Image (spheres, rainbow, N blue to C red):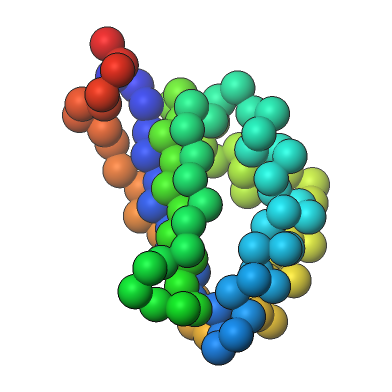
Length: 103
């Protein structure tokens, strides 16, 4: 299996979670939706923390998963979200060993 997975947790400043989402929508949503390398992608609000966002994705390979940070708009995305975050985001790369529906 050559897929790669990525888990990200963002902690927004109090009351800024929707603002972080709007920045993601402005820069990243269309890219993710049109990316053939992104097999699945979930942008979620944490049900137990009103200021947390959890993102996880399954990419066709490690390069597909890392293409996000290579986009020309990524620096602007990071700059705009940085002022809305309460702490550095947590990034965890993982190598799937089994995926439902994948052979």
